[in-house]
Length: 108
Image 1: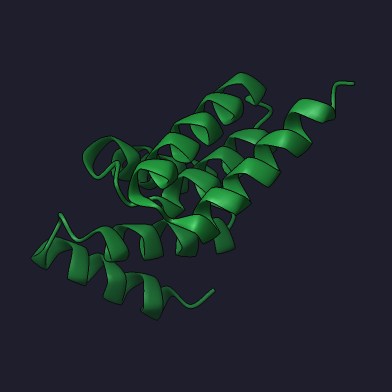
Image 2: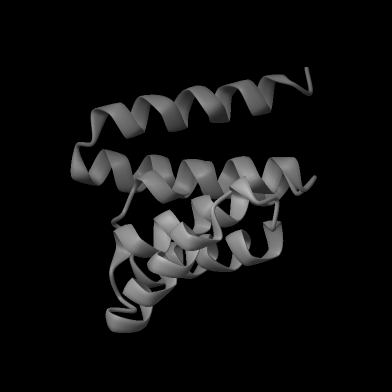
């Protein structure tokens, strides 16, 4: 992926380190580059610092799945479901519930 895009996003982050959208976009760029540790750091930080940014939960849980961290994925999906319900974010809620159900049923 383009280093220029990542560099630009990192500059935005330096200017406003609390901007949730920029932090999410940086994580996505790192994922595209297969730099999972950096992506994980940004996603975990975003969930901790801005728990109402509901879209993050799905992507963080998917990354946990990819890393073989099943219990962390389940926990993250569940937290995301609670946040999405509280905010009445029906699209995010549906995606989180579907992903959680699929992961839980994978063991059956």
